[in-house]
Length: 218
Image 1 (cartoon, rainbow, N blue to C red):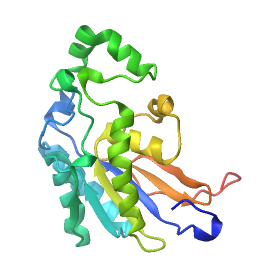
Image 2 (cartoon, rainbow, N blue to C red):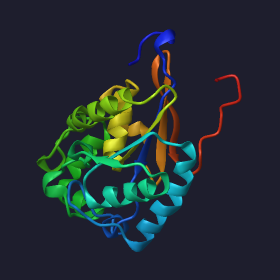
Image 3 (cartoon, rainbow, N blue to C red):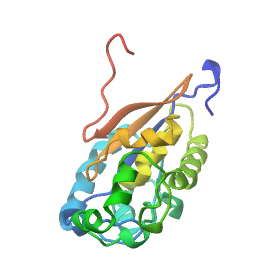
């Protein structure tokens, strides 16, 4: 997949976070809890879908949770593509953290939270390691990309933590640096492009279509 220059097929991966939920507004850790979109979240998905349709995606895959399935359905509606759902694209399972607000996590599990922010391998709330999330999600993305035509585009509809860890794995960053990628806003996306040296991060937390890089770093 990431071979020499002659093998590069110029494919792209768009990793799209779901729209707003009530728990997002409350800063409540969702994890694998199945929370629906708000009306605003659905409107965000519709707006973003109209933009992403202009990229003429070839395939859409999505987490099977309601917030991602509803987001993906908006892009399917404007492109005519089907959506393949896979539970491996779900958000990080975070055990007892799930359902707690950010302030409650800091109050009850402050040391664990601080260790995670330092880049240490932490099972937040007794749940998954970030590397385990990447190990289940990244292969699903890679298998889907392998089915694309040359120059094709895959849209992956998932969750903020899962997208960050998947990007980190695909572009070869050490796991303790994945947090440097930062979070994604609701219904924003990141874009990876295929190069002779592997996948390259072209856009991160974007809300408009990618523009060509015109400069010395191209």
